[in-house]
Image (cartoon, rainbow, N blue to C red; front, side, top):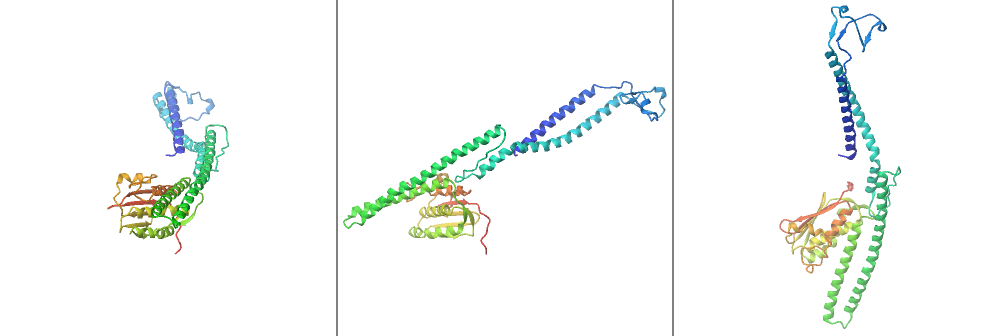
Length: 382
């Protein structure tokens, strides 16, 4: 139940309790009041009203003067009739007033909660790359104005923090990649020397492999930091076309691992960053190939969601959630060329696109990864 509905219910409930209490008080006071002591006689008369001796709204006459067909009511009967009339009329008035109170409560609650709607609307428009929205609530310095100003101050601090993080990532990207590129060049030059010995060549190959791992690790960390910050730009991307490109890119790796692809897709349009989406699919495919067995298969299905499964070794169900954490792998750290960031990047990119990623063990061995990305609903023309 929404807060506006609850506030309206509270307003109406308080009004009903007060109204019922007021009716009860009036009914109790009326029960102790009786202006008549001898009864009431009802008869037709043609005399002008100003010539009648009226007491409490009734004409007082002698009993002997009453016609034979006169109706006589006792005080108890009159009192019962009056109290019943007052009770029913009060109940009808209370129902009508309660309906009006519900409507007024709904209107007042909407006016009271209007600043909260502004806060919610501003929060929904915020993204990591667009923190320029502010509430700037006008009004008296009450609690809601204080809340809006506090929210604006928090956004100012967040914008400053994100700007600092972006500068740090850009500087780190340059500072970390440059020495690795220099090291790789020096190693390649040393290996190309005519007097390079076999031991030096083996050492150089090992150093190049270590250097490549370091570069991939840095690229993965920077990509993870970028996707965690959200999307800087959005554009319409055909996900099925990216899958075809990434499958082709992983072709040589699949051949070396004796793994085949089984791909089934349909036109699927999403809104997002094509580079990050390519990284998401590429990581899924490379993981499915690397953690597979010779002669195995990588199945790629794209219909309502993207499903990538392989036929690798058995994966314990309790170990699956930890695979989405950075640097978490089933195999030993030195037993594979992976950096342990593949599924972490997949999950981060999916979240940046308002999607989700989950995994489960594949029957007979391997892993099934399901990625749900919001589809725009636009279909490719036939």
